[in-house]
Amino acid sequence: MKRQLPNPAELFELMRFKKPDLNARRRRLDAALTTYDLLRIAKRRTPKAAFDYTDGAAEGELSLDRARRGFEDIEFHPDILKPAEHVDTSTEILGGRSAMPFGIAPTGFTRLMQTEGEIAGAGAAGAAGIPFTLSTLGTTSIEDVRAANPHGRNWFQLYVMREREISYGLVERAAAAGFDTLMFTVDTPIAGARLRDKRNGFSIPPQLSLGTIVNAIPRPWWWIDFLTTPKLEFASLSSTGGTVGDLLNAAMDPTISYEDLEVIREMWPGRLVVKGVQNVPDAVRLIERGVDGIVLSNHGGRQLDRAPVPFHLLPQVVREVGRDAAVMIDTGIMNGADIVASVALGAKFTLVGRAYLYGLMAGGRAGVDRMIAILRSEIERTMALLGVSSLEELEPRHVTQLRRLVPVSPEGARAGAERSPRG
Image 1 (cartoon, rainbow, N blue to C red):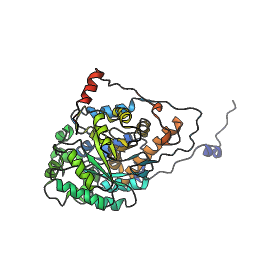
Image 2 (tube, one colour):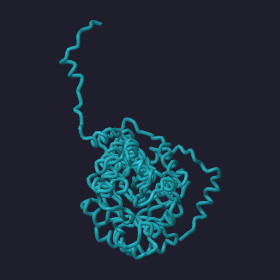
Image 3 (cartoon, one colour):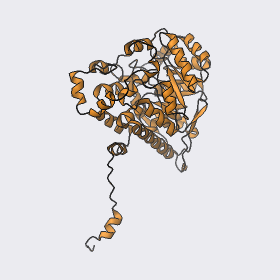
Image 4 (cartoon, rainbow, N blue to C red):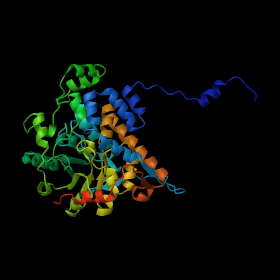
């Protein structure tokens, strides 16, 4: 081959030099290609106690590990020669539209992770056309979330507290603010053992110790934000009195029952969803009682360790309650493919919690926007590669669950389900 000196004009046609981005936040978020990338950025930028509160789960964290592994252990079955040039990710859920089959899950103490907190989450959800869920233990008030997302869909997650009147007041405020769905949470009769928090000496508000100070030295921005913004509190509960510890203890009540569910249903004018369902009989019973939807959830692995994996439970529940029931799922979702697989197996909707908080810690509102963009691109790409143009085309045949955890005795597993108490 004849060789020659490079022609500068031809060289510049082949190579384009990228203009450097001087905005550090935008630069690091643009480099994040997955939610795990956002997790790594969040870990660098957030003090250990706050990061571990988000990232951790109960006891040995087996429930969370198994939930994530359940999504990894699937096999997709794509159709070939079936064009899906234009993919529609929108769906109908609980009487309204969502641009994608996921919304933001309720999370407590959110401004602890990054001071923009629920304002960033609600604003990003509204801009993306997906629902945002505010926790009873949120650090932004019901009314301020409404102001941050005035035209979007806002949902409220309710703990039935020992002092029932406090919970009733929250229901009334959420209704007055135009929230369209209430999530009645049933998996927190007492607090789970979150060992990372105990080992870190985690408290709300954060207390300074030598370890806290040493850990904060390379993260001065977090402390500057924390110390120069309004104090951290449960915003919707700030007028109820008591310390943060008192409110936490009051939020957990082992006496919660079906009677409480009926009282709340009488009060609430919108859609009512029960969150924290973990077996088939309870799912059937709730649908028969006429709730508008259920969320299969083990609270992100933060309550009972070794709890059932919601994604594994999903096909059984859908078979029993029917594919028309509003069965939703959370826990362990880190990729848009996880969401596509859930929809294929019958879920009407999904909720993301930690993925949202990783984005928030990585870059505030811009980080949440980036998290949503990552999941959107993964959903669209997975659907196109499967050969489906809409969520309605997804079917169980598109997914095989490759389960590592198989009951030793199927008869024993069935017996355990049958022993579930009836309400």
